[in-house]
Image (cartoon, rainbow, N blue to C red; front, top):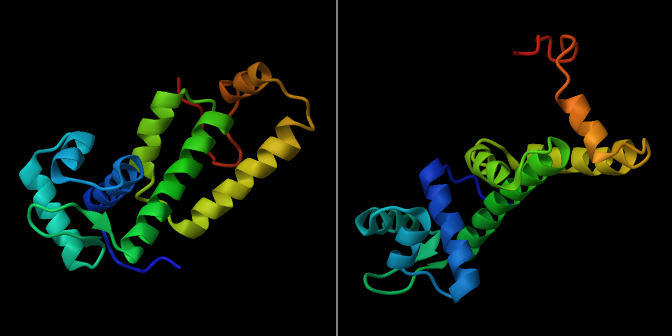
Length: 161
């Protein structure tokens, strides 16, 4: 189970970036993280030191950065939440890929693991039981999503114009 370390959105983004860079290059460097996140190198250095002090990365000045086992576990959990959200946005709400990516990046930090799992199970159920068994086409589902005829009785809200 992922440890209960309280991390800011920014620090979670650094962990996720390090994970991506480790996969791509086997190691992460301050310069690569700065480019990946579009931030300045001194910002990266400060964040990496903070993550090191929390025991989430291995880092010494002028050396490569790597995730500790705990840092890897947290980074993978963040990545999982992002994937679940992106899947929901693209496959259920039919949001285009780039917009889904951008929205998932913002939402992943507010979603806890248990809720992400419930959302994942909902996506599976929706895809396998609703769309497939109802023989709904993507176009029919899009029409349902964009319908603004009546108030939502579940959320108790009226559609916006």
